[in-house]
Image: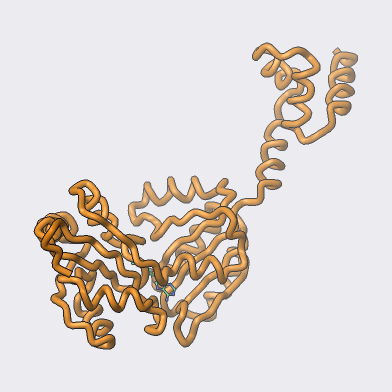
Length: 289
Ligand code: SAM
């Protein structure tokens, strides 16, 4: 694929996350025809390449050489060589150093294209049975304690489905931390996706501790968490307002220039009650004064 007329291309090649048959024809063709394959762990990727009888020079691209190696690869692409990026499993640039190379290629004017294929987060989301309409992906939760706490706090009121990656030896503690911060929610633990012992375990966070007191987490996991129901958020907000004196509540809107009728409408909506209830309560309050 050496391009003598201009710069080469970066091909992001998705590889299987457990089942070799999930590789696409286009990925096999591309891996066999590029000049260089950059892999996160060359010892791991050599097995895949041997299986498909692909004999292309392999180089390592990982967390600890991601900037220097990106510069090296970009120079090669500027000289017409084409590069395929593969990671240990799944779609490059998802929770791995690939995003740095992609960014630097764009900045250097190198063409980037992605050959779609397996990706653990999407596979898990579709199997979870939780809402797929709006979701967020957090990857691995930060290991830095402060950052981690801040993120968990953010997740407390997240209404979208949340997807996180977790290693088996951290799963139990992560599940109990999630319970402590965000309260009880439905979760789907999707493990060993596309492999022989693939499993989706659906339960509530409150049940997870007991479940894992009897067994050890094994294999690779994606945790899919139900978003906070909007009705619960509304209820919590209404309860907060109910602790505010009704006259003070009215004053907030009146000070913003609303007339009494408009303010009553807003107060009723905040407190999750009817306008008539507000009217009556204001009359009662006035009568008692
Ligand atoms: N780039 C990959 C992708 O597209 O999904 C993710 C790489 S990330 C370094 C590895 C994490 O992905 C694992 O710790 C696990 O959370 C998740 N993962 C990868 N393969 C999986 C599988 N077969 N089953 C469940 N989770 C998997």
